[in-house]
Image (cartoon, rainbow, N blue to C red; front, side, top):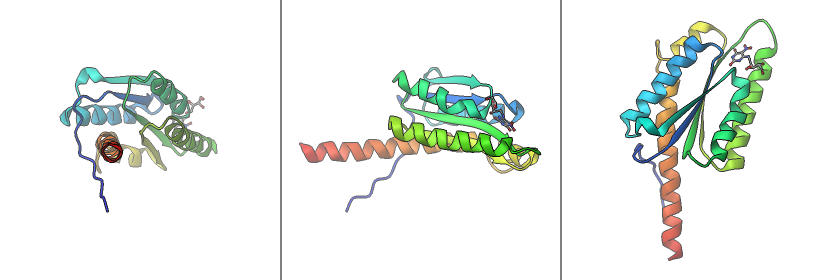
Length: 162
Ligand code: INI
């Protein structure tokens, strides 16, 4: 039996970040958290590219565009969808969640889901570094771990073939 574990090591990795401008007072905090955490774990600042989009609904297509360039090992998607009085919340949430999952599987590329979906502004701010952690920073660590565990699986597979 083999157990694969990923290490949190960003050396040599190129990372794309797609961030929604809607609720920017929250998403800017998520972005800062992600950038700081990536650099803290060894990613060069110059190897992190950021694309701003109008809202969370626009995230999946832009992530796909980034991945298509083949410049990035993985991508972090950041946004904040806050429930209002309309059903728009549900449509945007559904679009961004299924969109990101579809793009990740179709392109065989890790995409971290750093889109907050909350009932209130306070809940979103809490998760953006104001109280209970920063979802952007969490996504950075999750991405590095996911990339490393994939590397370990591929390495073991190659070793078996030789
Ligand atoms: N986009 C968000 O990122 N967060 C929201 O809370 C939000 N709400 O509530 O409407 C939102 N809407 C915009 C949407 O993502 C698209 O940008 C827009 O519909 C244009 O396609």
